[in-house]
Length: 160
Image 1 (cartoon, rainbow, N blue to C red):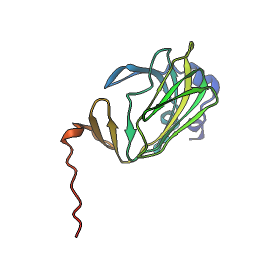
Image 2 (image 1 turned 90 degrees about the horizontal axis):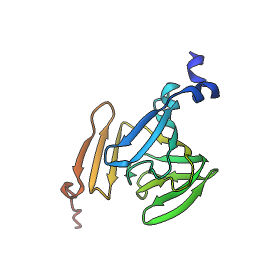
Image 3 (image 1 turned 120 degrees about the vertical axis):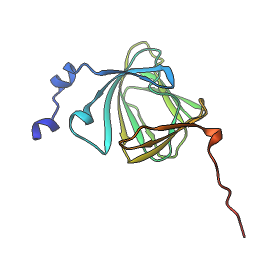
Image 4 (image 1 turned 30 degrees about the vertical axis):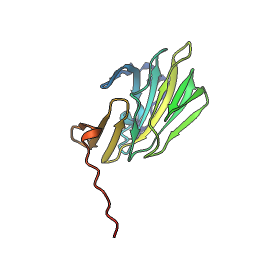
């Protein structure tokens, strides 16, 4: 059993990775090595990503329930958090608390950007994609539901 939990650097280097394109943004394209999955982790994802020049890691989004973070190993780019843009480079850490502002990460440098991305895997999450005006409800083990944010009912609180 212990063999599965240790993935050597030689094994990681030989892993081909999986190309992924975000379903809401064709520019959101990277190659992912899901090390956590390979080691049998279930409550959080641990991914080594290779983000090509000019790509974005994901559609601009925010998680209402789950936290995620990024550590940049190589390269440079721009982290967009809400309306703000931040220059980031190798050695920088970015934390995205649950319920925080929408965010994305762009490779604006001249070489590939290599990052570790870690995120919770709760049984349920709500993800907003503000530029698409979409909200996704994700349930573990089931397909996600994607709806227009404008169609979401917001009950009013009545004061006595």
